[in-house]
Length: 485
Image (tube, rainbow, N blue to C red):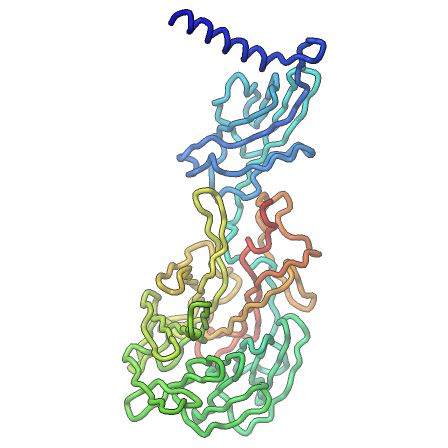
């Protein structure tokens, strides 16, 4: 047994010597001239950040750069980081930080202050070659998922004259902005809000209540000052239905969902009424006014688009923050987590989630923005990533910038546009820079043709009867960043 151990030990020593002292064809030892860093990672340290060792670092051998393309969260402390470096048999790996210089190969457990970039000098095994690498640990200066309106611009709504009312919708792939300026009713249309608007002065034989307007891709409906329903398929030529309704809830295909009243009782109704249809009594908790525009949700496993509304006032005059859903036949209370408000902007957009392995996913997200309560106009934002089952208030990452006034009854339209586009006729208020260090080149170039969604917010008011003659645009910062390689 002792003899076996002796031979095994000799065999292992021979293997080590063969690996360390490779020889050429003439039997001479081959000494490596490589100065390559083949792997780099931070050591795990939960006191700094969970899963710190899983953060991916890019090694740019040509330019001598080592960096994390996806920055660490804002506020991460990087003044005491340890790391792992793998080389091709380097004789020295000299680290120079703001505080110290040392040979990594002699002490691999030193904490490094990486608040500023560090230098890594790799000396080949032969000692004949050296290469310097700049190590940069990127940390967000702003939250990348913040609804800081990157590329933010604003302009007046189209047309001239004092704005008295407006409602803007997306209809048949165009933006339809209905307005009353002075005593004139008009329609402005465009593919994108920043393009040249086609403005038509409307000749109407009724007085429209633009706040009541709702649209699908097949029909637009509006109530007049006497609550008579008018419909159109082109926005210009309107037809009276002769029917009086309390409110238009929304439109699905050519079906207009309405509310009717009989004495003190309210009913869910439709126009046109399907054969055999009977209006259904509403719940006492269902709003009769002040609810949001209806958001439609569809998927391959649904037989009918689902319609949702948020907030408003019930028949007893009380505010509600409830989320109601319509499945094609029945209205149901889906959620009652949101604070009470009327005139909230309800729309779909995206947010992002980064898992424990630092993989970032884009999530379809429902947004509820602003509105009015009994005291004031609101500026808070609520989001749901699970189709309205639960809602979270955005405290910091998605707040409306301070230079945009709180408001209710604003119209929101989302348009896909080339990234980082700006419009010469609009005012820019990009007061804060895109965070440095998120990427080596943090945003797409202006020539990049990739489309991203921009949020356009039209009008709105700080109280009933006061209208902001302005449209704002912006998007979540992360959407403007280059993808991680």
